[in-house]
Length: 80
Length: 249
Image 1 (cartoon, each protein chain N blue to C red):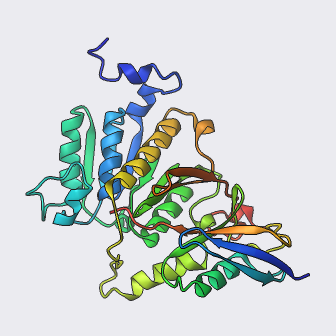
Image 2: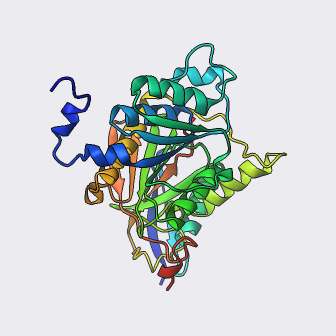
Image 3: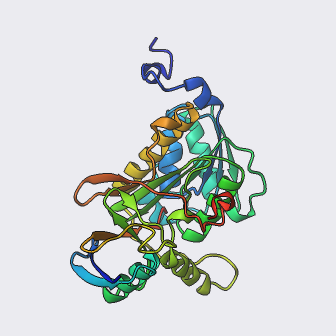
């Protein structure tokens, strides 16, 4: 069943609503949101409350449900 | 009492200074995070430290690397770091390894700390640490933000927390290279973020070395220096992660 979630961009601010099917993967959400915000470079993770969502898991497997809000967080790479 | 270098630390009940002193540690990376991490480690009583880095000191390192000095430019980072850290704690045995971490063949350690600057090297260290059953404390920064991930044997690893965006970023680095080295763009970096992340890394290392992994931050700790927040997010093993073949569904 199609569901609607909100993805919040924690770095740039703003949010988008996305329609998802249960079989879609967490990494698909990240790709679509990063594409929407023009965040082509760099890595991101998705967080729902106190948990990071595993990229290879489906929307159904991570128990996302209609009306949920998730946060997209930039994943730092540096250290020099 | 005041002649005992670690008297104040011994007053923290769960810190096991003997075990910390005997822990064989690998620090991967001798840049900004590596400097801060090794500084904290030797001051905290870690004595047996190998530092691996293939790079040389550049002028732009001097704003963040506490153990580098004017005049060190062009010298090997691991050697300068080892020498100056020994000044802080003469009993320390710090061995510089001048190579890429990917060329490291010995993984005879109790603990690994990642102070790297690209995903490819991190994933390499992560997979070796998991394979050898070594605790791995990874740190990363980007300007005013940073994170620390503690990987304990049997628990989720860096690969479990990665997705397609990490793979694409890693590919981008390799596609820009001509000689198999990873191309790392000049990222924003600032010493206070570096200090916070390195301090958290070493505190987690103290817990692991003291045999108190029950105190370790589970998952990934994110730091945002702009709003002054620090938050730890839980993480599960990815059943598709190649580092956890036993967890496949």
